Image 1 (spheres, rainbow, N blue to C red):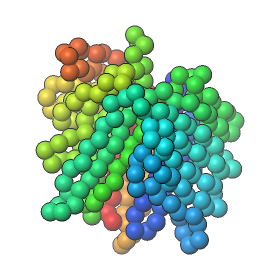
Image 2: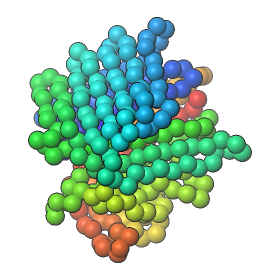
Image 3: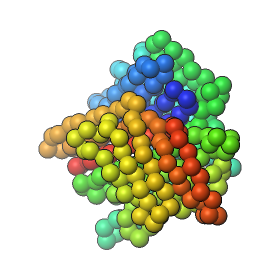
Length: 280
């Protein structure tokens, strides 16, 4: 889950593997970046919801508590730690929710459920700032991925949650690496309406992920450039689990073509770009 507004970004993710739950959360505001890393061990409380629309995912450690909950269309994120607090909520009942289930291997499956650019309520605080999502007109996204992911899993991802100059909400979800079985999860929301955008090609320097990115359409439906502000990075290598993960937030310039043929041009829209490699 995350939220974006002018000069503000909140990001959070929980991952469940055979090793248990791990999580990160961060807030960027007033040019200050504060992050929290957590991993479940021993007697730590670890709970993971298997339904993106019902149940609670919760991790409690000595560093703090992180909880994601869903009650139908109502979603909420709570983070409580000595350095970082987040209370983010939104309702996706009016939106065309993206739901996609695709085959993995001979008998497995992968499932994604996503929305982007839905109005956010709540607040976040980290020294020395507190932000109110409603007063900032912040827009949220929700990304739930589950299933039988490959032992070596990688993906690239881009997400926009912002308002266009005419006041319409634009949400964007682009990915490659997780759903390449004849179906794709690439598309955009204009206000609450979702439309397909086809294949996406990501161009960036893997040795310098904070350098500018370029993301282009395989079918002449969009062209984007991404400039990073700050980001969350995780590098780990062991026999049991290795990861090379970068989630960046910043601004997108570019254009896209809607399903009705409208060309929408934009500049300086807030959002996220991500590169992930996992061996587990």
